[in-house]
Image (tube, rainbow, N blue to C red):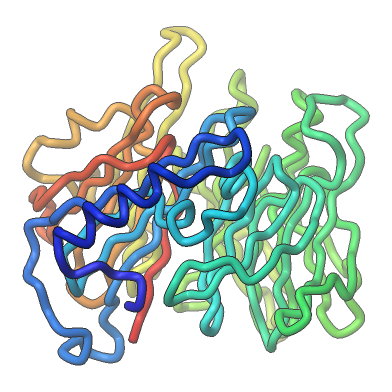
Length: 392
Protein backbone atom coordinates (compact mmCIF):
# COMPACT_ATOMS: atom_id res chain seq x y z
CA UNK A 1 0.00 0.00 0.00
CA UNK A 2 1.43 3.38 -0.93
CA UNK A 3 0.52 5.10 2.31
CA UNK A 4 2.22 2.60 4.61
CA UNK A 5 5.27 3.90 6.51
CA UNK A 6 7.86 1.16 7.02
CA UNK A 7 10.26 2.77 9.50
CA UNK A 8 9.67 4.08 13.01
CA UNK A 9 11.82 7.15 12.27
CA UNK A 10 9.40 8.11 9.51
CA UNK A 11 6.50 7.62 11.93
CA UNK A 12 8.01 10.20 14.27
CA UNK A 13 8.65 12.59 11.37
CA UNK A 14 5.10 12.23 10.05
CA UNK A 15 3.64 13.01 13.47
CA UNK A 16 5.91 16.02 13.93
CA UNK A 17 4.93 17.46 10.57
CA UNK A 18 1.25 16.98 11.33
CA UNK A 19 1.56 18.69 14.68
CA UNK A 20 2.81 21.82 12.94
CA UNK A 21 0.02 21.84 10.35
CA UNK A 22 -3.40 23.40 10.70
CA UNK A 23 -6.82 23.74 9.10
CA UNK A 24 -7.51 27.36 9.94
CA UNK A 25 -8.59 27.24 13.58
CA UNK A 26 -9.08 23.48 13.50
CA UNK A 27 -6.77 21.31 15.60
CA UNK A 28 -5.10 18.67 13.45
CA UNK A 29 -5.12 15.25 15.11
CA UNK A 30 -2.08 13.31 13.87
CA UNK A 31 -2.31 9.75 12.67
CA UNK A 32 -0.99 7.16 15.09
CA UNK A 33 0.80 3.96 14.07
CA UNK A 34 0.68 0.96 16.38
CA UNK A 35 2.48 -2.33 15.74
CA UNK A 36 0.29 -5.43 15.73
CA UNK A 37 1.41 -8.91 16.84
CA UNK A 38 1.09 -10.36 13.33
CA UNK A 39 3.61 -11.53 10.75
CA UNK A 40 5.09 -8.92 8.39
CA UNK A 41 4.67 -10.09 4.79
CA UNK A 42 5.26 -8.84 1.28
CA UNK A 43 2.08 -7.91 -0.58
CA UNK A 44 3.07 -10.28 -3.40
CA UNK A 45 2.83 -13.22 -0.99
CA UNK A 46 -0.88 -12.67 -0.42
CA UNK A 47 -3.32 -14.80 -2.39
CA UNK A 48 -5.70 -13.02 -4.76
CA UNK A 49 -8.64 -13.67 -2.41
CA UNK A 50 -6.70 -12.82 0.77
CA UNK A 51 -7.17 -9.32 2.21
CA UNK A 52 -4.02 -7.19 2.48
CA UNK A 53 -5.74 -4.64 4.70
CA UNK A 54 -9.00 -3.48 6.27
CA UNK A 55 -10.51 -0.02 6.64
CA UNK A 56 -12.55 0.78 9.74
CA UNK A 57 -14.95 3.72 9.81
CA UNK A 58 -15.48 5.26 13.24
CA UNK A 59 -18.90 6.91 13.45
CA UNK A 60 -18.05 9.55 16.04
CA UNK A 61 -20.76 10.86 18.35
CA UNK A 62 -23.48 12.85 16.56
CA UNK A 63 -22.75 16.56 16.54
CA UNK A 64 -19.08 16.12 17.46
CA UNK A 65 -17.73 16.11 13.88
CA UNK A 66 -15.42 13.22 14.81
CA UNK A 67 -16.00 10.60 12.13
CA UNK A 68 -12.64 9.07 11.22
CA UNK A 69 -11.06 6.23 9.28
CA UNK A 70 -8.52 3.74 10.63
CA UNK A 71 -6.57 1.16 8.63
CA UNK A 72 -5.34 -2.33 9.54
CA UNK A 73 -2.25 -3.06 7.44
CA UNK A 74 -1.88 -6.83 7.22
CA UNK A 75 1.33 -6.49 5.16
CA UNK A 76 3.37 -4.33 7.53
CA UNK A 77 1.60 -5.26 10.78
CA UNK A 78 0.42 -1.72 11.58
CA UNK A 79 -2.82 -0.32 12.94
CA UNK A 80 -3.14 3.27 11.69
CA UNK A 81 -5.54 5.58 13.52
CA UNK A 82 -7.01 8.56 11.65
CA UNK A 83 -5.44 7.82 8.26
CA UNK A 84 -7.94 10.12 6.53
CA UNK A 85 -6.82 13.13 8.57
CA UNK A 86 -3.17 12.45 7.78
CA UNK A 87 -3.73 11.94 4.06
CA UNK A 88 -6.01 14.98 3.66
CA UNK A 89 -4.55 17.87 5.71
CA UNK A 90 -6.36 20.55 3.69
CA UNK A 91 -9.90 19.19 4.13
CA UNK A 92 -11.75 21.49 6.53
CA UNK A 93 -13.33 19.62 9.47
CA UNK A 94 -11.76 16.41 8.18
CA UNK A 95 -14.20 13.57 7.43
CA UNK A 96 -17.33 15.07 8.97
CA UNK A 97 -20.21 14.13 11.28
CA UNK A 98 -21.32 10.49 11.80
CA UNK A 99 -19.76 7.87 9.55
CA UNK A 100 -22.55 5.47 8.59
CA UNK A 101 -21.11 3.10 5.96
CA UNK A 102 -17.85 2.33 4.16
CA UNK A 103 -17.46 0.24 1.01
CA UNK A 104 -14.92 -0.50 -1.72
CA UNK A 105 -15.78 -0.29 -5.41
CA UNK A 106 -13.07 -0.60 -8.03
CA UNK A 107 -10.02 1.41 -6.96
CA UNK A 108 -12.01 3.78 -4.77
CA UNK A 109 -13.17 3.91 -1.17
CA UNK A 110 -16.62 5.33 -0.37
CA UNK A 111 -17.64 6.57 3.09
CA UNK A 112 -21.23 7.63 3.80
CA UNK A 113 -21.21 10.53 6.27
CA UNK A 114 -24.76 10.79 7.51
CA UNK A 115 -25.10 14.14 9.28
CA UNK A 116 -22.68 15.88 6.91
CA UNK A 117 -25.04 14.84 4.10
CA UNK A 118 -22.32 13.53 1.80
CA UNK A 119 -20.59 10.49 0.40
CA UNK A 120 -16.82 10.95 0.64
CA UNK A 121 -14.87 9.38 -2.23
CA UNK A 122 -11.20 8.45 -1.77
CA UNK A 123 -8.42 6.65 -3.58
CA UNK A 124 -8.36 3.09 -2.24
CA UNK A 125 -4.58 2.84 -2.07
CA UNK A 126 -3.76 6.20 -0.52
CA UNK A 127 -7.00 7.24 1.24
CA UNK A 128 -6.60 10.63 -0.42
CA UNK A 129 -9.78 12.53 -1.18
CA UNK A 130 -11.08 12.47 -4.76
CA UNK A 131 -14.36 14.30 -4.19
CA UNK A 132 -17.77 14.08 -2.57
CA UNK A 133 -21.39 13.52 -3.54
CA UNK A 134 -23.95 15.65 -1.73
CA UNK A 135 -26.93 13.54 -0.62
CA UNK A 136 -29.23 14.63 2.23
CA UNK A 137 -29.27 12.43 5.34
CA UNK A 138 -27.55 9.59 3.49
CA UNK A 139 -27.36 6.17 5.11
CA UNK A 140 -25.90 3.21 3.16
CA UNK A 141 -24.31 2.51 -0.22
CA UNK A 142 -24.13 -0.38 -2.73
CA UNK A 143 -22.84 -0.66 -6.31
CA UNK A 144 -23.56 -2.18 -9.69
CA UNK A 145 -22.40 -1.56 -13.28
CA UNK A 146 -20.57 1.71 -12.63
CA UNK A 147 -23.33 3.16 -10.46
CA UNK A 148 -23.58 3.73 -6.73
CA UNK A 149 -26.94 3.47 -4.98
CA UNK A 150 -27.36 5.41 -1.74
CA UNK A 151 -30.28 5.20 0.68
CA UNK A 152 -31.40 8.52 2.18
CA UNK A 153 -33.85 9.67 4.83
CA UNK A 154 -34.10 12.87 2.70
CA UNK A 155 -35.57 15.02 5.47
CA UNK A 156 -33.83 16.68 8.44
CA UNK A 157 -32.33 14.66 11.30
CA UNK A 158 -35.21 14.80 13.77
CA UNK A 159 -38.04 12.70 15.20
CA UNK A 160 -41.20 13.81 13.41
CA UNK A 161 -44.50 11.87 13.16
CA UNK A 162 -44.95 13.53 9.77
CA UNK A 163 -41.44 12.80 8.49
CA UNK A 164 -41.38 12.45 4.72
CA UNK A 165 -40.71 9.38 2.62
CA UNK A 166 -37.11 8.48 1.95
CA UNK A 167 -35.35 7.77 -1.33
CA UNK A 168 -32.56 5.93 -3.11
CA UNK A 169 -30.15 8.06 -5.16
CA UNK A 170 -28.25 6.73 -8.17
CA UNK A 171 -24.73 8.14 -8.60
CA UNK A 172 -22.46 7.80 -11.61
CA UNK A 173 -19.13 6.65 -10.15
CA UNK A 174 -17.12 8.20 -13.01
CA UNK A 175 -18.50 11.75 -12.75
CA UNK A 176 -19.69 11.58 -9.10
CA UNK A 177 -22.98 13.13 -10.21
CA UNK A 178 -26.45 12.11 -9.04
CA UNK A 179 -28.23 10.70 -12.09
CA UNK A 180 -31.58 9.47 -10.74
CA UNK A 181 -33.69 9.34 -7.61
CA UNK A 182 -36.59 7.10 -6.57
CA UNK A 183 -38.91 7.53 -3.59
CA UNK A 184 -39.25 4.48 -1.32
CA UNK A 185 -40.56 3.96 2.21
CA UNK A 186 -40.01 5.93 5.40
CA UNK A 187 -36.40 6.35 6.58
CA UNK A 188 -34.74 3.67 4.41
CA UNK A 189 -31.64 2.03 5.83
CA UNK A 190 -29.60 -0.82 4.33
CA UNK A 191 -30.08 -1.97 0.77
CA UNK A 192 -29.05 -4.94 -1.36
CA UNK A 193 -28.99 -5.55 -5.11
CA UNK A 194 -30.17 -8.86 -6.55
CA UNK A 195 -30.26 -9.13 -10.31
CA UNK A 196 -32.00 -6.05 -11.68
CA UNK A 197 -33.69 -5.08 -8.43
CA UNK A 198 -32.71 -3.04 -5.38
CA UNK A 199 -34.17 -4.09 -2.03
CA UNK A 200 -34.37 -1.40 0.66
CA UNK A 201 -35.23 -1.80 4.37
CA UNK A 202 -37.69 0.98 5.35
CA UNK A 203 -37.31 1.65 9.08
CA UNK A 204 -39.69 4.56 9.67
CA UNK A 205 -37.39 5.46 12.56
CA UNK A 206 -38.24 9.16 12.61
CA UNK A 207 -41.96 8.40 12.85
CA UNK A 208 -41.73 6.43 16.12
CA UNK A 209 -43.79 4.75 17.43
CA UNK A 210 -45.41 4.39 13.99
CA UNK A 211 -42.50 2.52 12.41
CA UNK A 212 -42.44 1.29 8.85
CA UNK A 213 -42.42 -2.48 8.34
CA UNK A 214 -41.65 -2.97 4.65
CA UNK A 215 -38.87 -3.70 2.19
CA UNK A 216 -39.12 -1.65 -1.01
CA UNK A 217 -38.34 -3.31 -4.33
CA UNK A 218 -36.91 -0.93 -6.93
CA UNK A 219 -36.64 -1.97 -10.57
CA UNK A 220 -33.29 -0.60 -11.75
CA UNK A 221 -33.96 -0.13 -15.48
CA UNK A 222 -36.89 2.23 -15.03
CA UNK A 223 -35.73 3.21 -11.54
CA UNK A 224 -39.14 2.94 -9.97
CA UNK A 225 -40.54 1.27 -6.89
CA UNK A 226 -42.53 -1.75 -8.08
CA UNK A 227 -43.41 -3.41 -4.79
CA UNK A 228 -43.33 -3.17 -1.01
CA UNK A 229 -42.76 -6.48 0.77
CA UNK A 230 -44.24 -6.87 4.27
CA UNK A 231 -41.27 -7.71 6.49
CA UNK A 232 -40.96 -6.69 10.15
CA UNK A 233 -41.29 -3.73 12.51
CA UNK A 234 -38.54 -1.13 12.17
CA UNK A 235 -36.25 -3.04 9.74
CA UNK A 236 -32.60 -2.00 9.62
CA UNK A 237 -29.97 -4.41 8.27
CA UNK A 238 -30.40 -6.21 4.96
CA UNK A 239 -28.03 -8.97 3.79
CA UNK A 240 -28.08 -11.43 0.92
CA UNK A 241 -26.66 -14.91 1.49
CA UNK A 242 -25.11 -17.13 -1.17
CA UNK A 243 -28.43 -18.94 -1.63
CA UNK A 244 -30.13 -15.73 -2.81
CA UNK A 245 -32.11 -15.28 0.40
CA UNK A 246 -32.46 -11.85 2.01
CA UNK A 247 -32.09 -11.49 5.75
CA UNK A 248 -33.72 -8.49 7.43
CA UNK A 249 -33.12 -7.41 11.01
CA UNK A 250 -35.99 -5.92 13.00
CA UNK A 251 -35.29 -3.53 15.86
CA UNK A 252 -38.88 -3.87 17.06
CA UNK A 253 -40.59 -0.94 18.77
CA UNK A 254 -38.50 -1.04 21.98
CA UNK A 255 -41.73 -1.72 23.88
CA UNK A 256 -44.08 -4.56 22.99
CA UNK A 257 -42.65 -5.78 19.67
CA UNK A 258 -39.30 -7.54 20.22
CA UNK A 259 -36.33 -7.57 17.87
CA UNK A 260 -36.29 -10.40 15.34
CA UNK A 261 -34.66 -11.70 12.17
CA UNK A 262 -36.69 -12.31 9.01
CA UNK A 263 -35.71 -14.37 5.97
CA UNK A 264 -37.14 -13.36 2.58
CA UNK A 265 -36.84 -15.72 -0.39
CA UNK A 266 -38.08 -16.20 -3.92
CA UNK A 267 -41.72 -17.14 -4.37
CA UNK A 268 -41.21 -18.16 -8.01
CA UNK A 269 -38.57 -18.05 -10.72
CA UNK A 270 -38.85 -14.25 -10.95
CA UNK A 271 -36.19 -12.38 -8.96
CA UNK A 272 -38.53 -9.69 -7.66
CA UNK A 273 -41.25 -12.14 -6.61
CA UNK A 274 -40.16 -12.65 -3.01
CA UNK A 275 -41.86 -13.07 0.33
CA UNK A 276 -41.01 -13.56 4.00
CA UNK A 277 -40.64 -17.30 4.63
CA UNK A 278 -39.29 -17.47 8.16
CA UNK A 279 -38.97 -15.36 11.31
CA UNK A 280 -36.41 -16.11 14.00
CA UNK A 281 -36.96 -14.64 17.46
CA UNK A 282 -33.32 -13.64 17.72
CA UNK A 283 -32.19 -10.04 18.29
CA UNK A 284 -29.59 -9.22 15.63
CA UNK A 285 -27.89 -5.83 15.42
CA UNK A 286 -25.28 -6.64 12.77
CA UNK A 287 -24.38 -9.70 10.72
CA UNK A 288 -21.88 -10.97 8.16
CA UNK A 289 -22.23 -13.92 5.78
CA UNK A 290 -19.51 -16.55 5.29
CA UNK A 291 -20.72 -19.51 3.26
CA UNK A 292 -23.60 -21.19 5.07
CA UNK A 293 -22.84 -19.27 8.27
CA UNK A 294 -24.20 -15.94 9.46
CA UNK A 295 -22.08 -14.49 12.25
CA UNK A 296 -23.99 -11.94 14.32
CA UNK A 297 -24.22 -10.01 17.52
CA UNK A 298 -27.27 -8.42 19.10
CA UNK A 299 -27.60 -5.48 21.48
CA UNK A 300 -31.18 -5.38 22.69
CA UNK A 301 -32.35 -2.67 25.12
CA UNK A 302 -34.66 -3.85 27.91
CA UNK A 303 -36.96 -1.07 29.14
CA UNK A 304 -37.78 -2.97 32.33
CA UNK A 305 -34.23 -3.57 33.50
CA UNK A 306 -32.89 -0.47 31.71
CA UNK A 307 -29.96 -2.54 30.49
CA UNK A 308 -28.72 -3.93 27.21
CA UNK A 309 -29.00 -7.64 26.62
CA UNK A 310 -26.03 -8.71 24.48
CA UNK A 311 -25.82 -11.93 22.51
CA UNK A 312 -23.51 -13.48 19.90
CA UNK A 313 -24.13 -16.42 17.62
CA UNK A 314 -23.96 -18.23 14.31
CA UNK A 315 -26.99 -19.10 12.17
CA UNK A 316 -26.96 -21.70 9.40
CA UNK A 317 -28.61 -19.84 6.51
CA UNK A 318 -29.43 -23.09 4.70
CA UNK A 319 -31.40 -24.61 7.58
CA UNK A 320 -32.28 -21.21 9.10
CA UNK A 321 -31.34 -22.50 12.55
CA UNK A 322 -29.18 -21.15 15.35
CA UNK A 323 -26.16 -23.45 15.45
CA UNK A 324 -24.03 -21.60 18.01
CA UNK A 325 -24.93 -19.26 20.85
CA UNK A 326 -21.50 -17.66 20.73
CA UNK A 327 -18.43 -17.57 18.52
CA UNK A 328 -16.11 -16.14 21.22
CA UNK A 329 -14.96 -19.16 23.19
CA UNK A 330 -12.30 -17.84 25.59
CA UNK A 331 -14.58 -15.74 27.79
CA UNK A 332 -13.19 -12.39 26.59
CA UNK A 333 -16.61 -11.37 25.27
CA UNK A 334 -17.28 -10.30 28.87
CA UNK A 335 -14.79 -7.47 28.31
CA UNK A 336 -16.78 -6.05 25.39
CA UNK A 337 -19.15 -3.38 26.69
CA UNK A 338 -21.09 -2.50 23.50
CA UNK A 339 -20.37 -4.59 20.38
CA UNK A 340 -20.83 -2.22 17.45
CA UNK A 341 -19.37 -3.84 14.35
CA UNK A 342 -18.48 -7.26 13.01
CA UNK A 343 -16.47 -8.58 10.06
CA UNK A 344 -15.00 -11.98 9.15
CA UNK A 345 -11.90 -12.56 7.05
CA UNK A 346 -13.15 -15.01 4.39
CA UNK A 347 -9.61 -16.31 3.79
CA UNK A 348 -8.42 -17.31 7.26
CA UNK A 349 -11.62 -17.10 9.32
CA UNK A 350 -10.43 -14.33 11.66
CA UNK A 351 -13.37 -12.57 13.31
CA UNK A 352 -13.29 -8.83 14.03
CA UNK A 353 -15.58 -7.28 16.64
CA UNK A 354 -15.58 -3.61 17.65
CA UNK A 355 -16.52 -2.18 21.02
CA UNK A 356 -18.07 1.32 21.20
CA UNK A 357 -17.63 1.39 25.01
CA UNK A 358 -19.22 4.66 26.25
CA UNK A 359 -19.88 6.17 22.77
CA UNK A 360 -17.89 9.35 23.52
CA UNK A 361 -14.26 8.18 23.70
CA UNK A 362 -11.97 5.73 21.94
CA UNK A 363 -13.33 2.26 21.23
CA UNK A 364 -11.56 -1.02 20.57
CA UNK A 365 -11.13 -3.53 17.76
CA UNK A 366 -10.74 -7.17 18.79
CA UNK A 367 -9.44 -9.92 16.50
CA UNK A 368 -10.44 -13.52 17.20
CA UNK A 369 -9.33 -16.72 15.52
CA UNK A 370 -11.89 -18.89 13.75
CA UNK A 371 -11.88 -20.96 16.96
CA UNK A 372 -13.00 -17.91 18.94
CA UNK A 373 -9.72 -17.19 20.78
CA UNK A 374 -8.67 -13.55 21.07
CA UNK A 375 -5.50 -12.85 19.06
CA UNK A 376 -5.10 -9.11 19.66
CA UNK A 377 -6.92 -5.90 20.52
CA UNK A 378 -6.23 -2.29 19.57
CA UNK A 379 -7.57 1.17 20.38
CA UNK A 380 -9.71 2.79 17.66
CA UNK A 381 -11.45 6.11 17.08
CA UNK A 382 -14.80 6.97 18.64
CA UNK A 383 -17.62 4.47 18.00
CA UNK A 384 -15.87 2.01 15.66
CA UNK A 385 -18.54 0.51 13.46
CA UNK A 386 -18.06 -0.34 9.78
CA UNK A 387 -15.31 -2.42 8.16
CA UNK A 388 -14.33 -3.36 4.62
CA UNK A 389 -11.39 -5.34 3.21
CA UNK A 390 -8.76 -4.30 0.67
CA UNK A 391 -7.32 -6.85 -1.76
CA UNK A 392 -4.31 -6.91 -4.09
